[in-house]
View (cartoon, helix red, strand yellow):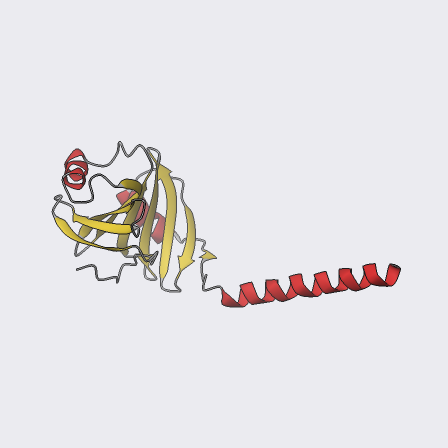
Length: 170
């Protein structure tokens, strides 16, 4: 009986350690903590004064400051050299901080009756846009894009791909 318990324990340990190695090796997460220099902090404070941000490196090329403001989650992206490249705002339900004209545009679209799962706003030097992550029973989840003026850009099946400063959306 002791031999059987020992064998089962050894098998469980081998299986769990194999799974841990597999999951770690498949991870594409290259985010790392980042201690910003004064230049990075000053650039952030120009855009968002007096925020308490946590910093990390993303995709080896960007330094990202994360903080909450008015109930929403902000990510402010900078180049390695400290230049602002993008801001992402992840709006939290009930989405009261999303501009009314953007909500009106969404509700007037063909997806206006779908359930909103998430709303994100992206501001970059060359463009600004909103993405509504929506769902409806029996349908694929969709990402519905509007520009900063509320004009419909496109709708596509949700792929869960992160938007980066270099992502082309049109």
